Structures are given as C-alpha cells and as structure tokens.
Image (cartoon, rainbow over all chains, first blue to last red; front, side):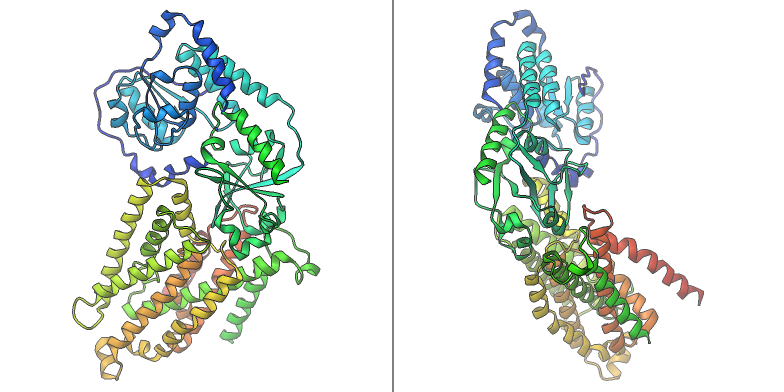
Length: 307
Length: 313
C-alpha cells in the first residue's frame, strides 16, 4: 500500500527544480483511467452511520491531484470537502465548481497551498513524490496513492475511506472492485489492439488499466505480452498480430475513425482496412475510477457491436 | 573498386531491410507477402532516400560554411520543424498528413528566417552569420515549442516530440513517391555546384580569383541543402548523425573532390540509415527504437575509428 502521511513543520525552503521533468510530465494522461453510479450510492448509505467524532478528526479541506482520486472522493461521500482539483477533473459534474490548482502533472505548490488544504491526495509518480515531500515540509498531510490498475482502486478506496472517516463506504467500493475482478469474464473471442498514437505507432501493453478493462470486457489485447503500460511498435508487428478490432481513445464523445485510418501504410492491418474501430472516451476509460464497472459494461457492448 | 564496395554495401543494406523484420516472413513468401510489399519495401526505399539526402546535404553544408561540425540540422531546421509539428497538434489541425506537412512548413519558415538574417551584412551570405543565425533561430523555436508543450494538454504533444526524434514508421508508397518527385531537383542543384564547392574549400578569395560566383553558389547550396533537409524531417523526423558522420567518412575514402564526394555521401548516407532502421525495427522487437538513436549508436563508434585512422596517419 502506497499511503504516506507526513506532518512536519519546517521553515519554508527554496523551491525545488522540478522543471527538468517537463518532457516526461505529459506521459500521464494516456495511462489515467474511469467508474460506477452504483458504488456511489453505497457511499451515500454509509454516510448515515458515521459518527460526528470521526468527522471532526478527519480532513475538512482536501485537494485532489488526479481525476480518479476526485471521483473516488465524491463516491465516498466526501465530495463536499474537496477544495481543489486538476484541470482534468470533470466527474461528477459538480466538481467543475471547485477551483482548479493546475494540470496535476507537475504540481503547482503555490496554487495548492493557497487552497489551505489539510490533506492533499496525489497519485504515485516521481514528480508527485517530490511534491508530497515538499508539502510535508510545509506541514500539510499528503497521501500518495497508486492508480495504475483496478486492484489499486480497491486499496485506494480503503485508504481514503479511513482517512476521510468514511471507512464503510470505502470498504463497500473495495468490495465492488473485488467482485468486478472476480466475476468470470464473458469471452467474446475478440482480439484487439489499443492504438493511442499513430506516428510512431504506440500501443497499450499488459501493465495497464486498459489492458485489464479489455480482459474484463471479454476481449484479449494482442499486445498483452508487452510488460509496459505502452510501447512504440512497428506497423509490421501490428499487421502480423492481426487484431480483429482497433481501439482508439478520444478526448470527448464517440467520434469518427482516427485520421490514420486514411493513410496507405495502415491498410496493411486487416482491422483498419475493414474500418473496425472502437472509440473510447478517455475520461471514462482511461482512469481506474469508481465508474469502472460501467466502463467494463460499456466496453463489452461496444465490442459486441463491432464484432 | 571503392564504388563497387559502396554499391555492394548499399545492396546488402537494402536486402537486409527487406528480409529482416520483427515478424518472420518465409523466404518463399518474400515476393508475395503483404507485409513486405506494403510496409518493408517502401520503408527501406524511404530510409535510403532520406539517409542519402541527409548525407549529401551535410557534405554540401560542411563545404559551404567550411566547418567540420556542420550538419543539416545546425541551421535551425530541426527547431523549426518541431515547432511546426507541435503547433499543428496544439491547434488540433486534422488529417493524415498534417504532421509531416506542418514540420515541412516549419522547417522552411526557419530556413527563410535564417537566410534573411544571414544576409544582414549585405548581398552576400556570410557563413559565420549563417551559423549564428541558425543556432539562434533553432534555440528560439525550441523555446517556443517547450512553452507550448508545457502549457497545452499533454499526451498528444509528447507523442509529437517522440515522432520528431526520428522514425520511419510513417513510410508508405505515398511518401516514397513524394520524395522521389521532390528530391531530384535540390540534388541536381548540389551536384551542379560540385566544382564551385571545390573552389570554395580553398577559401573565399582564391575561389573568386578562380572564377567562382561565390555569392550565388552559397545561396543555391544553402537553399538546396535546406530543402533536402526539410523533406527529410517531414518524412522521418530529426535523424541525427547521418549528415554529420557520413560526409566525413566519405571524405576519408574519396578525398575532397565534391563531384565524387557528393554522390558517395548520398549512397553512404542511404546505406547507413537503411541499416540503422533495420536495427531499430528488429533489435528490441516487437518494440521499436527511434532510428536517430541507432544512427548515433552505430555512427559514433565508426566515427571514432575513422578519427583514429586519420590521426595515426
């Protein structure tokens, strides 16, 4: 479990040189991942049983530095305590009324501190670990959570549930995730490839949330054997592995086939030739959020339609 | 004999590029395989043409600015191309060809700017001013690119940079056709300037005494080499080292006569990039390396060996 809480008071020191990671920061959005109204309802049920004492001890001003964490906080019933979010946080819709503290990739400490938080929740990354250390030095409690896979969501729900005094809601979400993971996956017999960039061709590998979603939705990722979250491969490899369906991510709404579908060299791939694309909305499918069960069901439906 | 050796090396490189790949294609199926026909073959030809263009542009530019460190990207073209590509993505311009096209336009814009600055001293193109202007324009474009990348939304822009670091994944018969139509003209201009480049190597004054129209040669060579480089960027991103190392290696073998050096740099550059691209596709299959990394990994040790030979002499 990747929880870390620091409460230390030190004089403010010189700013750290975080700018050097500028190239790497954008890596995040591709791998962020999505969740479920049903689970949110569980959170509401737990609220009634909570004692006032627990609430007084738990953080009242929370800044979330990832869309999945924001969704989780709302699902836990702690949404009214979120006082800062990232520009990517778009669910549930009322979160847009909360001030943004930046893109959350390379945390803007000044903007975060200005929200006077008593808890900052971050996903685990090199930049965020540094930021968490700095926030700790400023006397602000932090929690650094993993959110690479669905299993992480169950852990995170438990941790955040206890931290916010909503342990019952957290455990309920964790149980929901465990059930989703344990449910026998329907086998559609579809082999798919996620293509997240076309030049150079970049695909999603086995160590990713999307790969997990594909498995739960009843399909098999032909690049499951790649041990990384994403990788650059050659067109030839995609053609040889011959997926039945090509899955692409879009920023918003179901859209038209990707631009690369029209390029000649891509016609070597059977699924591209046959225009068998499934377009997923990145904000729902890209992040392991409490909407995961709905995402799996929707993915399954889209795949069946594409078959 | 030297030509025979170089030709054989080129033939071997092309053959390897067609036979080898991340997936296994049986010998008997080489002729009929869809993968060979529509992916490997155009990619091998494109790698050869791009490598050749870079090698020849590098050789001509080194003679033009009389600086052994000159390479086709020294004069700000890579910065301009990167800015073009990133702008296209940040502005959400669509279409299958938008990235190469935007990079091409960016490179041409940088070239025009550097050229204009290079003329500040009057009608003649001063090589020293040209280099400084190139470095300055490149740095400025790089700064603007980084600003856009750090301000705009993220994943696509990172991917654009990944493309810019070099790769021939976009190779297709369309790209081969475009390059085949486009490249002969600047190549011809450079070959026609071979004799003048020989004179220019003696120094500006002697070249003038011997009858070279120094200013015109400089302008032509600069524009032709830049046009070649811009086309190379558009189809393969910024592939380093080919344009720097190949001309030096070929000069070691062919001497300083540009009539021989320029074609040799073309064939040598093509051979190197074709080999490097094969390594990039095969070495870590099914994943792929950026080809610019391979040209550096292959090119630098070869270069070090050559340097030892020169200094030992």
